[in-house]
Image (cartoon, rainbow, N blue to C red; front, top):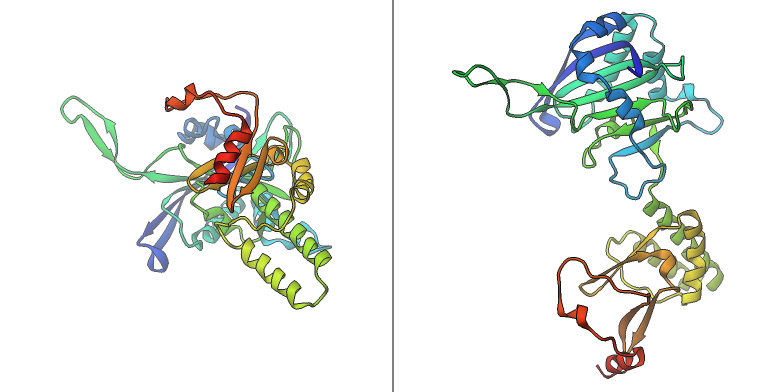
Amino acid sequence: MDFSINYLSFFVVQVEGQGEQADKKYKHYQTLDEAMYIESALKDFLDGELMKVTKRKVERNPKSESVPTKIGRFIVEPGYDLETNPNYNLFHRIRSADSPDDFKNSSEELVRAYMDTSAIRGGALLVIRAKFNKYFDEPFVFILKCDFEQKVATITDEKTMIRNVERAITTKNMKSIQYPYMPEEGMLEEWELKIHQSSHARYFEDFLKFVEYHQSMPEIVKTQVIQMAQQHIAETYQEESPERQQEEEYIEAWSNTPVREMQEKWTPEQVVEASAPIIEHQPEIPLKLKLDHIDVKAMLSDFGESLHIAKVNGRYVIVIEGDSFTFEKGVSPVEFLKPEPLDEVLRKIGKE
């Protein structure tokens, strides 16, 4: 086994009702030391799971905000140490407990904090302190949450056939917290932890109130574009002029609009220039457009190179150039097309 488990506290969370009226309870079943764990049924249940948690891939700047696995960083005021962060202190107490009772008490403190979140579901909550034998003397803390499985049965004899099992749990879709984060084998990041939860659930983020998460790539790009737009406004309009104030308010409203239209403010050269630092940071940043009902998926680096946008008689035209076509699903007569010269197509568009 790659990890040796020092202590494990097993809790069961029960939730009846919903929202603020929900009745939430927890029960501590048992706290195991290393010798007790090896002899318990939990060993077979969890064997290999901690390595899965540590090896689960995570991006520092994910491609979307709804990814299930994230890196969190403890928040401190500038100039202050980790010891000023309540979430860090809780993990530190669990990590440094020197007896089963100390470990159980610190774990119970964590469970109580978890119970205060607004949308938790019932299930088993396991608090584990373990050592990665290959590299470290310093222990890890793992928080594992298994939801109750519905309609579970075991096969019995030929007469009874099945027996219903109440409150069954499984490691499938198990949520987890790992502290500290291990960017690479043999390297620890004391300021960071890794969480894994269903993309629609935010239980761990709700209960870790003093942890922040790295921006997703769409958030980073949005911030950079807003900054560039603000710089363009500052260079174009006089300070405190009505026009500048109007443009700043317009950009603020634009940035908070989920479906946006073409703004028609920058030249193609300015767009390429503004895109350059974004592409340098993330070469494969996607570019998604929708012209009426037609979706176009490209990369930002394609704009100005193989993807061009123009207007003809007040209508938008997207010109995409490339060396070859491929067709996959959905056979159509278009596959037999002999393409016309571009100037002929543009003449047709101009007449329309």
